[in-house]
Length: 591
Image (cartoon, rainbow, N blue to C red; front, side):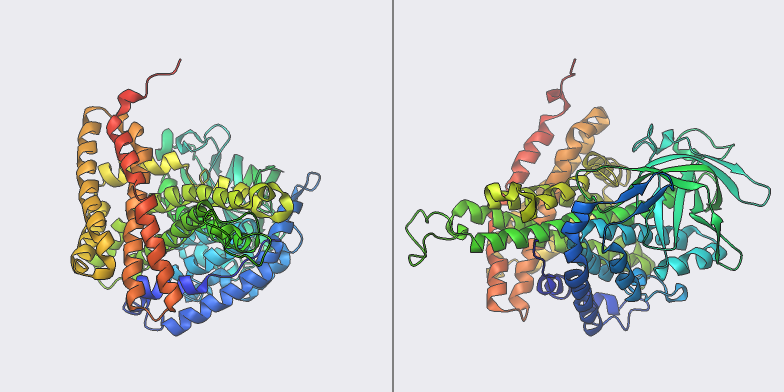
């Protein structure tokens, strides 16, 4: 079994020292009680749940997987999952960030992200069940009627029901304009939903009494394409007027997918055969409601990359400390032992420092993005809320696209530290590699994130989010221009921020002349943006460490990892810039 220890010290450092979360949160509307003492206590309890309840089910859940009873069209989750979900629900975690009127605790979104990181590190497959509920809750809260909110939100927030997002169809994939699921009006105000959805996480399971599916479908008068999509609430069991459950609705799993990873998560083919459904939001406006869920889900998937990388790092670092093999190139470091440990090898340190740099940098980025959701929702004035919204929109494709891709590198390097032992299932690290592979695919592939960043957030939105971020970097560099501890980083960061702005302008002009340049440059632009973004947070980490009350060894580790990042990882921007400037002409047609 692989080990897991909740990274509370680094979470607290990122939240309170690096990002100043307490000062920000307590100044927001309704945030007076969101003090560090309260948030610290929440983190502590989440860590216990993850370490003691979730982590022990990770390997066993992967080995057992989910079970599909074809005759009864029902899914059973692995052993221990129901008990873990019960502990999660009884602890109030399902409603941590939801409004009090629906039974939630109304804690800030950034706390939902911080606790979810630990849950996902503990058992990513298990964590997908409550994760989908969170997205459904956001959509219901923003787009549902008052009756819909009180009927469906309260049981989900209580952990009695769960939710799903039913978007993808076999012929459509990411192109939702091609979906065919139909919604026929009934005389009683409901709709008959008919169609097939695929890749539905938590589409069926035995963890809760009911499942609320949010389904995209077309009304009879729907225009073609994505403008003709509406969203509907389809309950696994029909809900009576008093909120109790009635007869089974005609929404059943047709199969579960057999996957290379996240095997404890039930990924279902869902068949709707004139299932009773209810419209949520305006007709033909389902895409807007869907993006409410999608944006939250994309940030959460980026978080999954961080969570898997964190656990991979912990285990590969522990292995490198304990594994005795060979001697240091400069002579024995442990002469009283038969061999030195792996840490004496420079290349092993490279692999571990790469993981640490990406893990801790990604944590700062994702928590920063989560803070923007709190400011967007409860900022004291419209200008503040708008800027947070624009910053968040810009950062989401980076947080999702780059962090999940870096998780491929981190889990691969973790396995590499183990050598041949990493290839053996019993050692557990190969599961991280398999589980991490899906996160670059669902909720939009990396290519889709890249196109979203460059096509929408830069070109369509006129770089407004980037400009906010560059202004923040510029102010930081100016403030620390004479700071001795930051001297190695400020000049590089300032120069890269200027280059980022100029490169973006040149690229936008090229795309105006030839739209194909967008597709040719988007992936490298995403990586280029991501590496500079992490550089900013590593520079902030050094500044924060200098002023923090952390132990000297903790501070030194921040300095050392920042130096490693700037010297060995940040130069990757040069390669991505060169590829961007190479243009679409280097991508000839393939015959």
